[in-house]
Image (cartoon, rainbow, N blue to C red; front, side, top):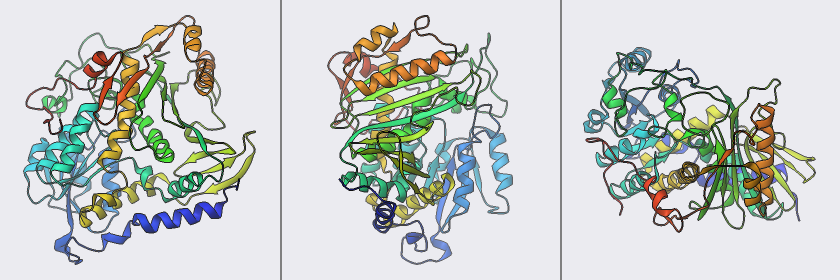
Length: 502
């Protein structure tokens, strides 16, 4: 068995870059293969985000605007957000960049504008599906933020819309544009550390509870709340703030599994060479330690039964104990992926990593010249290149890639939502034949205990082992009826996602 060397990885990375299309390759060319100013891609950004929301990361649309401005051959010509204050903020900031930017509260006005070539969708999750389908129907190409969809059914419609209307649709899982990772995975698949045995996706990110309210919170006066709700039920706002906290409610978000789990799940699925969601999934988790109104799990183990190498995703948000390692580590990491092979493992992410033997001894550091900002720019550039080439195969994370990786998150969440509080020893007995999952559960139990949660007193939720047909995007077998009800929502008119795929 030959060891991976840094030279192997770099050779794979360079070859991948050549085949993949480096970001500058197409950007100097127009769709008509001329570089004139009239051939700029005219882009709209839908969803700007709150740069000051508690717990947030600065507004996703706001962040992407900065990356887009760095790229040649594209111009932002329109902004859309249901919050007038966010529109005013970004319009003012962009005045010197382009003093003729149109602003809209309603995304339908963006899609009606025939001069717009493409849109970036950076709304809350519950708007991703509808905005993408409407944009495709209007002849726009779409860069949609992760997670691809809010539920399984609408993800299928989004893929169908990309096909039917011949649109370039890319999901914002930017690690797919990492030539570094592509080189690592090619080397691993060549068997230089032996066969892949397991993949671990890690999201150990401390968060705090969002509290409770005893009466509805008025939405900001600058917000069109009906448009904000869109496809979701229009209910009183029963939390402290409108923005960002929507992640932790099923009507609008997909929990941490869909928020950050999607990134590492997608990397693992790519590494494993799996083209679809798995046929079976199991969930263990709960919302522990937060005395708040949130609904989604803040501690979540998901087992995806890929064969021959399964995938386990571990989400941890609770960190109330003293000390820098209260949230724990697995093989020295709190995030990224661990790819376990017969002769060792890779631990890392798009910004770099290392190879280890099974005793945890480092074989070699593998450096990457990519960072989070560069990956975002490369991924957007890759989208713009495909807008010019009109070749969906040029996309690093085309619609079907986004759908199947996001489907994994949905499967895990559906299993969790159908689960029941179960004593820890019963959980452990039910998974005893799976050594890797048992180990993950034991480590999770220790992490919770270190943070003041005893599963004997506050049991975790054990979800059923669900079976799934990825070709039809339907649950089968036991629990199929209950699970399929959670695979599609009841939409609120006139914000219903059109049915395109049967």
